[in-house]
Amino acid sequence: MLCFFLILDIIFSAAAIFGGYYMKFRAPEDADMKMGFLTESAKKSSETWEFANVTCGKYWIRSGIAGIVLSTAATDAAFLSSEEIAAIIAGIAVAVIVILMSCSVTMVMMKLRSNFDENGKPNAKE
Image 1 (cartoon, rainbow, N blue to C red):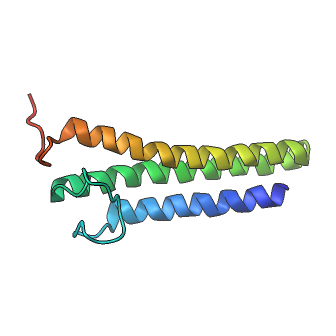
Image 2 (image 1 turned 90 degrees about the horizontal axis):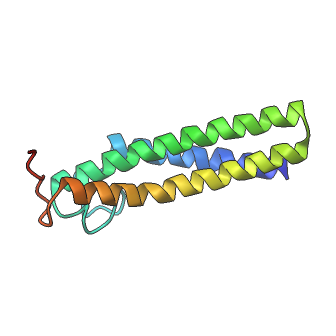
Image 3 (image 1 turned 180 degrees about the vertical axis):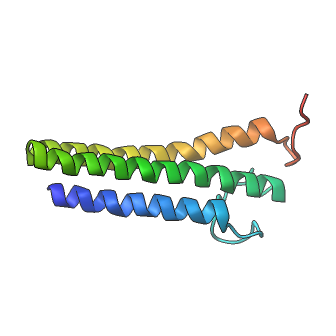
């Protein structure tokens, strides 16, 4: 069971880090592409598209790093205590990665609403 969760941790962490890197540094310039942060509010203008991808990419990279840290803790727990405790920690790591990646969408949407108007233009700084 521990091996299963550790493999999931590695896959999810790698997907989060590589996906975050792609969105942050390599997202396509055209919002009509099939990859990136594809929501209606992100596609309103080039500014919203770039902001959404960079912001979501940061969150995904952080999620992947958190997964690596937790899976490392699970591996350490396996050596220091029991495999059952390590499997629980590794299962928690999988859940944390999924929750963080899911919450990143909500966080980006909230930031888009606060930083851009309904037409996709940046809000004036007061």
